[in-house]
Each structure stands twice: as C-alpha cells, then as structure tokens.
Image (tube, protein in one colour):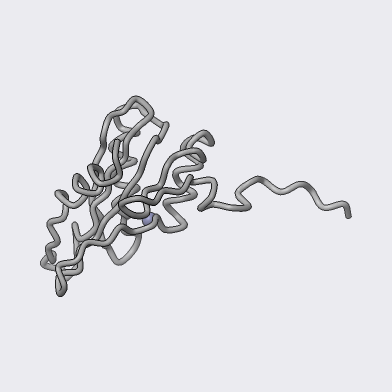
Length: 135
Ligand SMILES: [Zn+2]
C-alpha cells in the first residue's frame, strides 16, 4: 500500500484523551500491514509502569489473528498545538519486538515519511547473535 494511504489510516486513529489518572492515551496511532495484506491498527497506551506503543498494540492485534509477518508499519502523532502530523520512527523496543516475532520481519518496510521507507534491518543494525569470543 502507498505510504500516504497508511499514514492517513494511522491518522484516523488519533483520539488523544487524558484518563482520570492523568495518563495520555491514543495520541499515537499505528497501522501494520501483515504478510497477507491485512491491516491492523493500534494506539499508544501511556501507563506509569509498562505502557504500550501504538506499533506493538497493532502488532498484538495481528498476532491475535494468528499472523506474524509484517509487510509495512507506520506510526503517526499530531502536534495538538500546531496541528501538524508527524510520522514517528519505531522505538528500540518495537524494533526488537518486530524482529523477535519473526526474523523475516527484518525485511519489513518501516514508513518514515510520505516518500521515505527503510527496512527494519536498516533500522536495527547489529541485531545478530554475536559469535563467541576467542578467549
Ligand atoms: Zn515503541
């Protein structure tokens, strides 16, 4: 799917709201296109202990349906003060999570802008298990 179409789908998920405990939910939205072409969605859940990024929330929905392969991923956040939409690169935890789901996800396309993508492999260098030291 085109980057702009997925960016717009992720933007549709944005419904930022404060919980009664003051936590911010839903200010980042993510969509994941699975290996079969299905689209899964998620929003961020900011909690004081663990929290959940929008990407991993969408990936959990994908896994719930029995899928593990990722074709494309995008996450977006809108600056409420300026109204501008930003595409966010996945955090380190999400990058490693995608790889650990299935090593083939290293070839997943991570959308970084309207016309820019990089593979997970490019965003996760030195991911291989290291060779033993010769000591
Ligand atoms: Zn993350």
